[in-house]
Length: 160
Image (cartoon, rainbow, N blue to C red; front, side, top):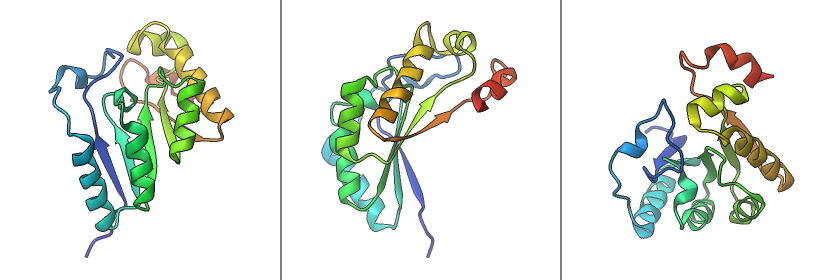
């Protein structure tokens, strides 16, 4: 038997950004229903998964994301969300906290100039604001970067 540690659910291809290094929003727009995702979450838990990672696209575009996080927690899974951060204002951070999310990964690709070049004007400030909002609600946050020829020189900035 194997130990399933983590499952990554790409729950949507929708995204509010059009990043230079990503073609996910150009893909299929079909999504599983809330009930279908709950079955997948339940099955993952029964297989022994420890963590459910909600990814996308931008998972916060799903109206049921908080319900799915709560359902994962109810099924004894740690819940993680990977986000570009643009939608995480104080209200969303509060809802994430109430849903029981364990960790939120925020994408930061380098300095403000590099990040905005790759992800869109203003997205860096929104990502930094998201980190502050998550901190306010005592939600663990991590920074995720996609290393590419466009930002590898900025990695020390991200690490700093």
